[in-house]
Length: 104
Image 1 (cartoon, one colour):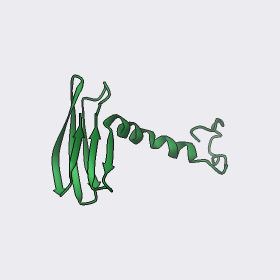
Image 2 (tube, rainbow, N blue to C red; image 1 turned 180 degrees about the vertical axis):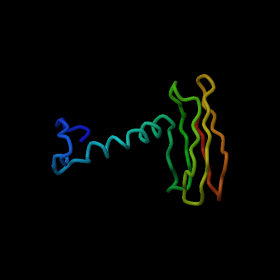
Image 3 (cartoon, rainbow, N blue to C red; image 1 turned 135 degrees about the vertical axis):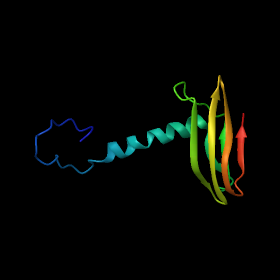
């Protein structure tokens, strides 16, 4: 297992313990939580509106294309690009009446 600390025992089965997958399941969500926090991404007004509140992209990431962001009344694709300290938010596809709010 990833975090348990037991040495590999060749071709035998992994050590059984009740919470074998808990650390891995929790860790897999950190990427999405980091993105949500840095983009200020939320779904407001009861899920009707996609909102970006002061979005920031990390230094190692110049652009990010989010596809199939789903709100109550539709779906949108959004392209975020960094220009120096600023981040632009471009709607590349929209199906339905999905309000997208960008707070600078």
